[in-house]
Figure 1: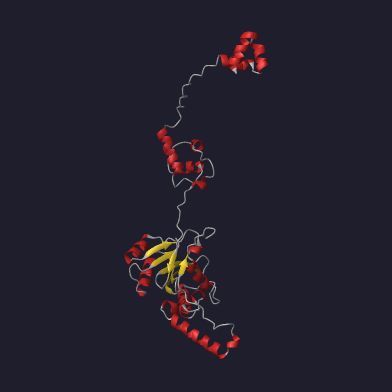
Figure 2 (figure 1 turned 135 degrees about the vertical axis):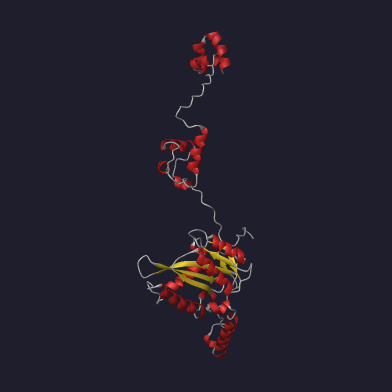
Length: 336
């Protein structure tokens, strides 16, 4: 277009040529003589107060550290001053974060580890145990006793319990070792599942389980569904009509638990195991008892078949497989 405008301007002058071709005169002259590129300006020198790059990186490392990653710069600045340390002003910290596009809710910047969902299967007793600790109220406000309980998830049998005035890894290791000894647990036979309490994750417990050849697994944080059998057993304990609001002393708590766990293991017909007692399932007596139930039902049907609909009634089945977090079935593609 500018070549045509130039040719026409040579014949009729610039103004009529630009008007005829709808080209601005400024654009015409600019095309004829383009402006020179501006010279590269020299980089502005850093002010004398600016931190050198190595010190700036040191400040960023502090801001990104696990200790300070979710704290505001002013809080970090004050904390460091209390420890006798000064790297830069809090305003400089804000500026460094702004340059890195990190000026936002810093609590959201903490990187939490990814915890795997436990998927555990038991097909017989002494394959998977679950253990936990619950609080029993003592005689005074804010006083508690600690009840340690290990339960077999297949049979629901309580293989061990302990009431203590404190929670400690030393007590936990002794408690677990005695429970394994009573049940004659062999190496590589058992998995012990627990939540993420301090005793459960202690080095003492980890070393003991390694020596015993017991695999340990843990629930995800704040996920009670990952330890359902212990939670359910504690609910049964505390919802009994005779469960007291407080225990007068640790001996009272132990006496109550002795009575409760004897009842729970030997008399309580559990809905999750075909309404047999945990002891019967754990020690292999339940199959014979179920056969006896079937015999009674068969006799009742034979005596009065008109009282039953269609067929001989069946007793509740025994468990064949017990899961903690069974895997979800894979979705089949459409048309299959």
